[in-house]
Image 1 (spheres, rainbow, N blue to C red):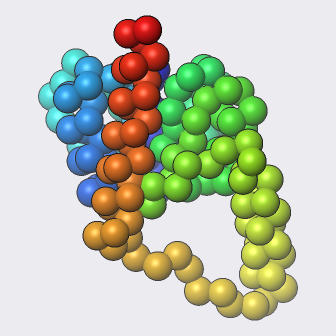
Image 2 (image 1 turned 90 degrees about the horizontal axis):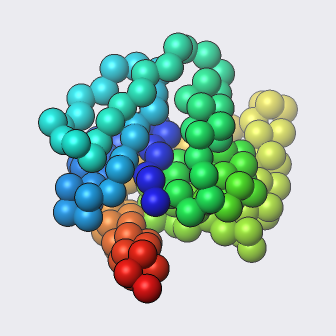
Length: 153
């Protein structure tokens, strides 16, 4: 399993959790963004900088992800794409997107986008809090543990 991170909108605290997990479990982790990122010196963590543009990082992740990989993203269309390819998608708040819930998330996202384009202000996502961080760390740990058990058996 490889972890792909949609790093343009990934909070620093989530990246730090990912860095520690990559080291602890020796899991290859690649951050993809259209701006420079600071990553720790590690043989398990890499970064790819793509040119600026709409969905350039998402498109690279979608093209390179393989079945069994994990993608960290809050981008619902990207999550849908990687789930279709047999990979897993986890939000920075610890929500695991699945084949069972991604279509309803995509429909809600499209509805909210329609509302915003018609001038209705919906606010934005609440700031990441301690519970979100803990939910993310716990969900990531469950996924990595399950992956390690599958490799051993």
